[in-house]
Length: 248
Ligand code: PXP
Image (cartoon, rainbow, N blue to C red):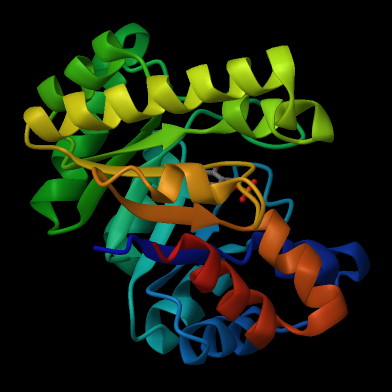
């Protein structure tokens, strides 16, 4: 079965926030992604509000008809927003103020009480809970222990290894293949625990195929590459091309 694609539209808001104005509209973006065949819309409400704003979540909640997944840190502030706006899913992610983008998965083991408490409150409100983690068995076990229903495997390392043509040959290709194997093993382990396995971060039209071939991965969250391509071919076409790229 082909994995689902949630399009992360944060960077439509990044352009808007560059001028603190009203365009481009993330609502229009969400509708175009859905009409192009996306299975869901993902946004990251960051503590520093550098792109997505609180009002965006409220508006998206009213407009998105497929699946609204909101990435957020496991803080009281963010959990309160989720409980009020009730997205279909919350993905708990680590956050540090100076990072350019999310750096690696959440350390569930090191933050077990905070994460457990957030998961419990979100699930009580009927929100599906995913945790973004590195492909690491002990972190997957911890995600299960805190009650997550899904894990999203961080593909940043694989993405980095496949950025250039080095990945096509010799040592580069071996390292990339090893990263795929680690992700596949993590997805198999997650599924054996009854967790749904998703994946994302840094995925592109060129590198997603090897992960789309892993049957245990049932969902991808992809943003930057789709929004980048949309600058040249339009969002509708960019989303359709990514759907094609993950079809096996
Ligand atoms: N998944 C998670 C948890 C993320 O934090 C991000 C980036 O916001 C993505 C997926 C999408 O990453 P990218 O924009 O590199 O496709």
